[in-house]
Length: 164
Image (cartoon, rainbow, N blue to C red):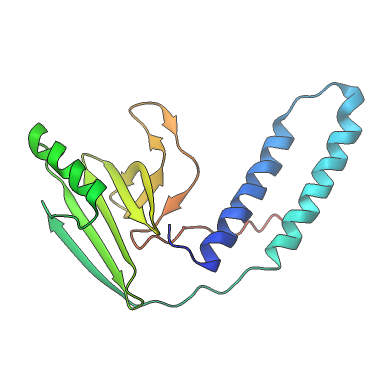
């Protein structure tokens, strides 16, 4: 994902929400419930405090290119394309270029995608309807994913929880 204040904040907010959910699911002995409740309360306070530091999204203008069988500029993605050619697979290249000269490339093939954004690589399932990459998700392999959902521009799709 792009290295933006919004993405960094969103990732931490998502991690805090996940930690809260995980803490609720731990089945501890009765003697530990008071400590667990205290930990949940402190974690909830932390998550609420973090919510208050939410930055504004940094505005960007994007040029979108979509090319069936397109050639990526990124070397790792270009290597994937070589494998696709050898295997007879079809693919689509999505390239987003910002007015700040940031480039995000995504290769999509057979419901799977690989994205390079902000110098990092993300693999997962491509949701063609919503046009997003669900990082780590693989329905065929039974992998639920990481919970990270990336826009083709490398922005993290996240809506702060109203329950906090």
